[in-house]
Length: 472
Image 1 (cartoon, rainbow, N blue to C red):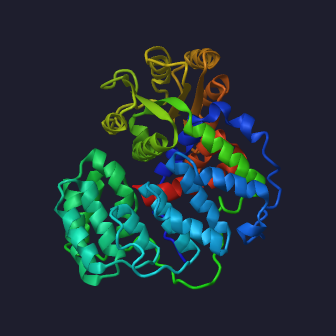
Image 2 (tube, rainbow, N blue to C red):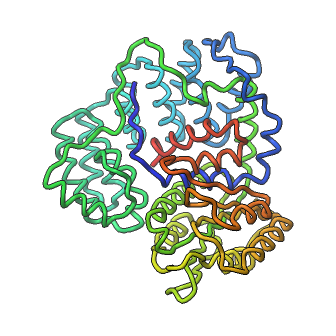
Image 3 (cartoon, rainbow, N blue to C red):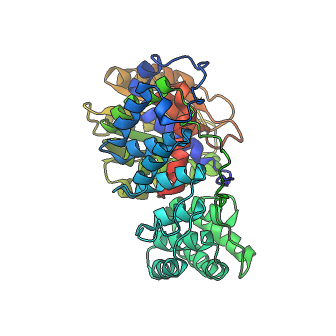
């Protein structure tokens, strides 16, 4: 089976870096206990009956977990086995009370190319689960589906309309897919900055266009596309055969690594995080700002689902004599409010090389209402250094914040090192991450690495990507 990758997305880079950074305060200790990266995965075990006791114990804890991400990880792990028992477990997860788990289970069943009865999903009510059902090649009642698509299309909510489009183009029904084009036009013409931030990657998936994250760019594309455009199902429909398919990265972990990952996920679900984002909004960041906002947006939604609680503060900064030097908003656990604040920032101003890094960090450290009973993280995202004479003071502030329990990480939105950025991260007991050209999801990997340890970067990337595919 071929699963179409999302279009080139630098925004995933930022999302990734942030996810790792949000949990990095304790991640390195856990990573040091992992087995060597050279340890071969024991993927030769194809049946749960032959799996080590530790494998069964870990799976049982995940399957009985009280949060849906734990059960979703179990669904991804079960791709590794090719026995009736594992298939029955996935079948049970496809009827889980949490729709997210049902979607993950459908994906794993599809990747295993497991045959299911034709009416297996006729009672499914959640459109996002039905989207996974169709994308992974399973059948559902087309007449009932058509009624659902028309219902979603009549909604004033653009998220609902987008779901209707995705269901229509994944259905395989030509008339339904052709009718969805008018819904795409409506979505593009009506969406604003915030809606474009979340809908852009989904529009990119069904149109085959780059993920631009800006509503005005989509409207420019629409003018060029004309009155009709062939929409894509976004993910390939697998041929359900008995042929093997390579298990995912999470499924290929050794039993010991899988057990260590389960311990971490349990810890993560109990963790409360205060995350402050300091974001360079000068004109030199215009190409990166939409990507950074998109990545932060995805991270906030993901983090809100996988940690106990997350509060997010936003600090935008430019330069002296610009419209604003800094613009900040206090911590909030209202993710929708944080998203509106994030997407209100636009790139403008600047001109010379240094930017208002020092005032931005001073606002983040001294003016936000940190709760030191929570894991505190500052993430600085920019492409230019502090003003001359203020770099050392930035380093000192990061050091003082670290002593108080707030970790500082830095994301260099440039291929070259930015002066003082590595020192700020080192003083803040964090990491400085550069974003190489063309590595669109390196940031999510870096943040995953800081949270889980380097050996889990790829597994977390896979889980995050799957979450974005199934749960938007």
